[in-house]
Every structure is written in C-alpha cells, then in structure tokens.
Length: 307
Image (cartoon, rainbow, N blue to C red):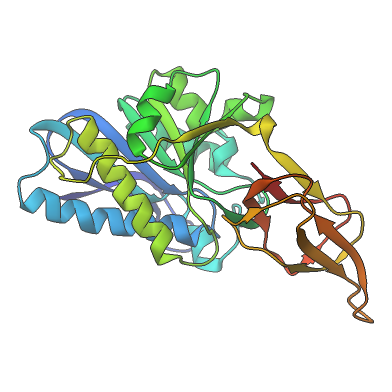
C-alpha cells in the first residue's frame, strides 16, 4: 500500500487542506474508488475505510493481479467532516457540483480540479455517494442512462438493484458525469445510511466491490456464484409517496419491506397535540426502496419511493 497526497491546498490559519489516497498494486490505472464529498457522509467514509483494510490484506497475500493499480480516496472534504457540515463550511457549496473543476476558481472548484486531474484516466470509477434528501435506501448501484457506463458491467457488482437515471442539467458538474466524458465507466454506490454507520450495509458494499473486481480479473477473490439476477429499474418507474401535511414523521414500515396496496406506510403527527393529521398508504403492491428518516417533514415531500 502506498499512501499519497492526491491534492493539497495551503491553509491560511490552520494546517493545510489535504485529500489523501491509498494506492494498491502497480501498472495501469484500473479502478478508482471515491468516498465522501460531503461532511455528513459518515457511512461512505466507513465503507472506504473497510475497503482499504481489505485491500491491504489482498495485497499482502499477492491477490491483486499484476498490471493493475487501484486507488481509494476516503474523503474529498475532510474540513466539512471535522465540523459535521454537509457542504463546504465557508460558502456552503457542494464539491460534487464543481467538476471537472477550475484551478483558478473558487475553493471547491480548485479542490474538484486537483482531485479530478489525478483520477480522470482510470478505467473504472466507483463513488460512494448520498441522496439529496435525508433517508435510507435499499443498497443499489446507480448509473446514468446516457453515459459511457454499461448495465452489463454494472451486473458484476451482483447487487439486487441497478437504477438507471436520465441525465439532468445539474449532473454535468458531478464527478460521475465527468468521469464518463473522459471515458471512465462510472458507477454510484448507494448504501443504506448516510449519517450513521450500518455495518451490515458496509459489509455488503465491500463484498460487492470484491465481486466486481474479481469478475473483471483485477483481483483474485473466491466467492459463490450469483444466485439472483439484479433488477434493473429506471428512476422514473419509482412511485413517490408524498405528504399533504407538515409535522412529525412516524414510519410504520422499514426499507426493503414488501407491502401490498393499502398498507399504512407512515403517520404525519401534529407536533403540539399528538393527533394524526394524515396517514400515508401504499398505492400498490411494491417494495419500500427509499424512506425519509428525519423526525420532521414538510408538506408535499416525497417521503417514500416504491418499486
């Protein structure tokens, strides 16, 4: 293992800002795995730490195929992690909306530029990321439907779901999109949680990436044959269940649970007198794919996504 500084920026009053990477193997740039871009992505950081621990073992046992280099960057935003603020502390900007970056621009543009110059020419890119809404997901692989990545490659993760989403205008400034512009097959990895550590979900992500790299011949890793076929869905096929009232959010189901039409999903409770203002019901037979987890919710908020 080689620990290296991927990008460094001089600090005016504190220690320098550094983005640290961990490099395994030697040869062509095969796979780059990126963790947190935002300061509340604790689970994503934890997943990368477990991958680094696993790759140290694989390298010591000679199970990284010669001619392949793997780079893992646990965090691109340690400053925000330190104070548990989701976006850049000074101007509240999102690093993952600044790619491919600009070396003479704002701070987050310079960070994006410095990181991207070091990872833009890897064959495969995997990013542990989080949703813009607070909540829990069914673990899945997400990819853009109009990019350089392919479903056939994504199937090697052996995850139960692959979600394909149409490219939106703001996607053009994300790492995933720009990776693909430079002909990297890029995939976003969604685990169950964001702000809390879920060890089972993290273990599933490590195993999935081991299967992915083994299938591509990058590492030597024995695993059982895939016994289930991934369900490929477009994000437009998901059914959103929205609130009509604002109040306390009281969930009645769990992520991954199968529900039938008419199943009560959640209550919206008056925070002052405890009365149930609204009960949300499943509009059809489906599985709970995403669930809002904050204790409060606003009106007209998509608190569930069902497949």
